[in-house]
Length: 233
Ligand SMILES: C[S@@+](CC[C@H](N)C(=O)[O-])C[C@H]1O[C@@H](n2cnc3c(N)ncnc32)[C@H](O)[C@@H]1O
Image (cartoon, rainbow, N blue to C red; front, side):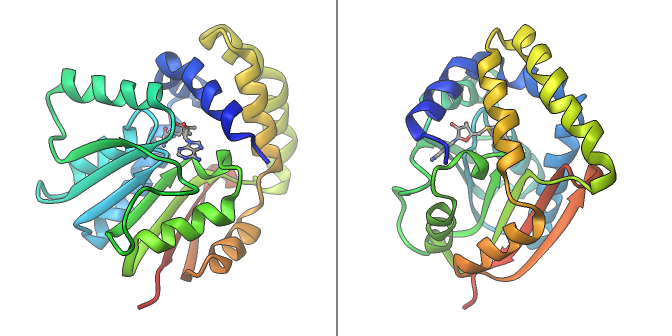
């Protein structure tokens, strides 16, 4: 289980270089993964959206660009330095006036029941100490019929695993250390990816949290999975 205090301080340390590291370490593919998430949300046409573990706000901003201006997007994260990055981007870009950023813990959301039509969480669930509790909180704040979208690393197809784990264990931490100056943070990233459940186990956890109609879209040889689910009425 990740230690929330250690996770928070790790993201605080890398916040300034988080976006650059993402682009370099994924070869830019991370933007395609987030685009697929946003396209799925857009098909639902939600009005009130929570982007949990929003970090530097990439998904929140992409949702704002893609959805009608009447949509209201709340970006929430427990790490203030990550939120500060999002707020600076929002101010300097002069855009996304329908996005608000708030501090809050995914395992005890400071939000009322049945407030949102959609909850997105992109590369955040893996970092939460109690995933099931976090999923139950997402279920609580959704309206009946509302949808959950979880974009997260997953276990790749078996033929691709040796190459993938060579990259995540041997190359990524060294390269990340050079880019961010914090190799330990990316050793954690690597370990957290390896420990994370495969897409079937993840579907089962989402169901256990109370969701129905769980579907999954595996991407890039299964490195990443987009789970979607519904809060039954
Ligand atoms: C890898 S970043 C993902 C950021 C963003 N969603 C993205 O796609 O780039 C993980 C984020 O999860 C946040 N996080 C981790 N545990 C959390 C928790 N318990 N509550 C809220 N945010 C959390 C971290 O602060 C960090 O900003």
